[in-house]
Image (cartoon, helix red, strand yellow):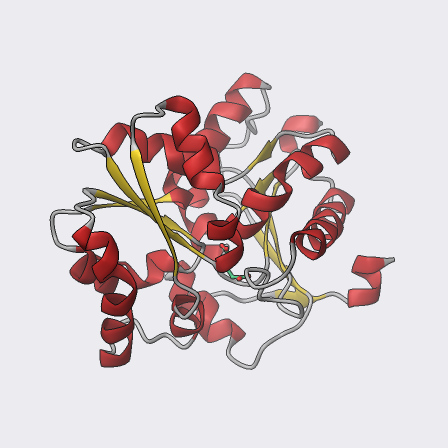
Length: 271
Ligand code: DGL
């Protein structure tokens, strides 16, 4: 039965687990199948055509697991490939840009919003386009922060180097007088404390993963796709490569033990 199928979530790597965590707290009874393309991460420095090609393969893999909806946890994929995914797959597809933008619009008081993300996300201006579509009078300041991804992967959440880099990236946005900052990348919620400190304590941080989990709930309502189960759902994890620190980082991201992770072959993905 359609309702009892799992929700599929994919990301370029393991950063999307931050979105799984949000999803599991909003929809605890749903089963989740997660795919992280750890063999080909990062996507944020790749061309649009490569990101689209990978995204279609990732979604096809999730469809082979019989998912009822797909959550594109990766902001880079959401900003580059969402339309292409919607054209190719006949299940609800939820990205990060629309929910993250709407939350930022509702949060800002002074109309000055900062966006941080990978180079691809920022170069594609997906967040600013979405925000301006709703309210062209808002001021949007965007900044690529590529070093935040490896810092989060290293677990350097409370490290002097991370603080220095955060200031280097964010001082400029702070000078623009933003009162709201969208964490437009899967990994950035991990560094939220350091980002908050550098952005200024009065700046409201927006976690796109939180906003998207709410949107997933609304989409399940809209298509009548909520499971009838009451028990806590299962989570299955698939990756295209198992990095040495996978378990450690996944546990940091999810704040819970992760037992089973299945590695799939890239040939299976690209066939
Ligand atoms: N998942 C990516 C994002 O949210 C960050 C890592 C990458 O560059 O692939 O944009």
